[in-house]
Image (tube, helix red, strand yellow):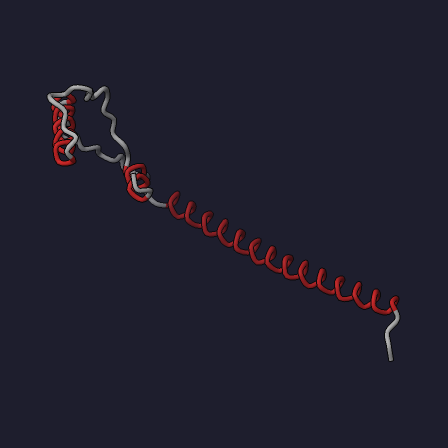
Amino acid sequence: MEMTMADKLFEGLAMSLMGFIIVFTVLLVIMGILSIFNLVAKRGEAKTTEETQETAPAQPVQQTQENLVDDTQLAAVITAAIMAMQAENGTETEGTDGLVVKSIRRVNAWNTEALQNNGF
């Protein structure tokens, strides 16, 4: 028995509708699971903050004084390291022509790690 064009159209629409229903049902289930995870995480944070409030007040952290090197000595060491690297690469210039250390700033560990991971 051959299907008419209307029967084929109806069957195609029914299949499409069933696909849409399945997709949106799965999306709603995923949304529900994520909402439950969010509630569990908020309850965990609330319990953690309650526990920290019940404990004794925090002791002030004693900051240790680091033995910092004078900036001029640090600039000299960095300049010497750059010159040594240039000599190793064969791009040594006479004296410090064109090489001026204008400023030195510390970078935190996150910046250093990011630079190393990106090949800089």
